[in-house]
Image (cartoon, rainbow, N blue to C red; front, top):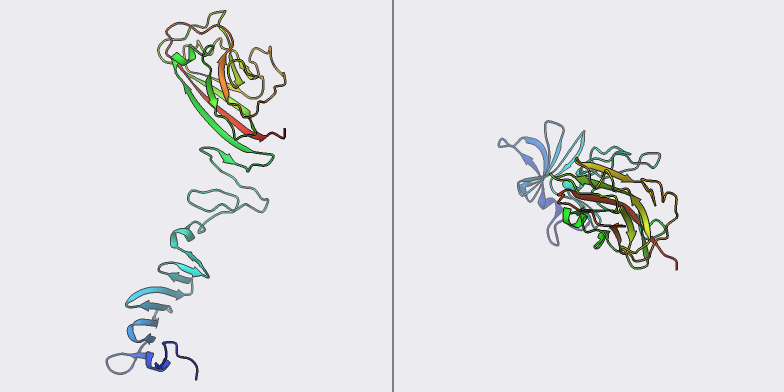
Length: 269
């Protein structure tokens, strides 16, 4: 005799009963396990319901299986919230609160990043974004006190900028950029460090309205004097914004917001 589904000494047929209505005729086809609140039920809508202690736990019909709770496969339990991440996804398109699947070409579209994007620690390193707000007082003291705009990388790595934006937020009074005053320099370590790029200060630092400068690459001097000069990255070094001559003067209250898109590359030395 086959082993009982319900334990030793209890017959399968003691627990599996065909439900009947009050007149003794067969009701909606059902198999109940021990009581009429736990079992399999067939409905007039061609559905099979599974209940446990009076609570519906699953429904089978022509459209599929509906489960209340989690679906357990082996040691993995998938909840409704987790399955929603897969429901309605479109291969090749990123959507809010959905899993991402590459299209047939291995591509994905409409990604938006709000911070750094890790690409591992191999040849590509990590692509990051650093943002710094420089006050009006700090702007007028850059020659003496350069401001760090990119923190130090991991030990043994170079910070290599890809592009930099400088956005001057005009207040009510412009800074004074006299002829002897310096230009802005993006460089390694400190005010004496190796330069990455030069930015003409005239018409930017002393602007009387909001102004933006994009520095697209190494030594892209707006004035052209330092264009195409190779730079030598410095391992383990921060990147600073410096003024290479006299301080800007006056009582200007404009601030400068700096955004640096950069990559960390591992030194092989």
